[in-house]
Image (cartoon, rainbow over all chains, first blue to last red; front, side, top):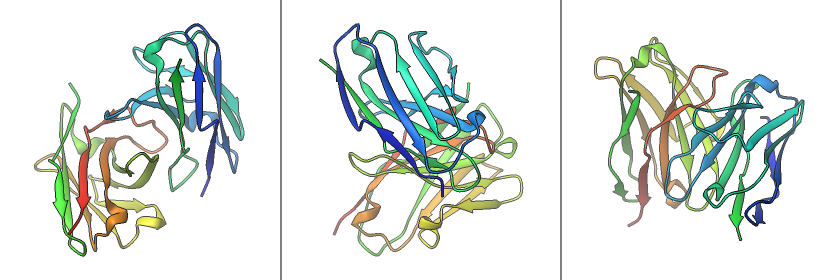
Length: 108
Length: 118
C-alpha cells in the first residue's frame, strides 16, 4: 500500500497570503495519477487538481499543483476566504487507491 | 448531466447489515467503474473498493475484505455497498464515485450517513 502523508495537518492563513501544503508518498507515484480534492464541511469531496497540476473545471487560477516521484504540493498564490476547506491528495499506483490524511486550511 | 443519487441515512444496530445504493443518471455505469469511499466523523477519506459493472469484477482494500461487498445492477444503473457485522467503527458517511482506473474521481454522490447504535 502506498501511504500518503500530508503536512501540515492544519494551517491558518490570512487573506492574500501564499500557502503551500505537501503530500508525500511512501513509494513513487506517477504524476499522472496524483490528484487533489477539496472538501468543505458537510459536503462531498470535489476534484480540485488532477494529474498533479491540472485544475479541474471551475477551480480558480490562484491554485496550482506540482511535484513528482514521492513529493507533491498544492499552492494557493493568494488565499481567499472561500478557500477554507480540507484538501486531500489521492494516488493510484495499483490497488488499493489511497488518500492522504488531509490538510485543513483555516482563514484568519 | 452526470448525477449520483445515494440512498438515505441509516440507523442500524450493532451486528446487523446494511445495503446502500447509488443510482447513476446521465451515463451508463457499464462504461466506467463505481467506487465506494468511507469517511468517519471528523476523519479523512478511505477507499473501500470498486466494481466494474460490465462484468461484476471487484477490487477491495484488504482492510474492508469481509466487511464490504460491492455489487451493481446495470438494469437500474445502480451500484450497491453492503456492510456486514456492523460495529461503532462503521459509523461513517459513505460516498460513491465514478472513475475508470487511473482516472480521478470527478463525480461523487452526496453521501449516506450510517450510524451504528443500539
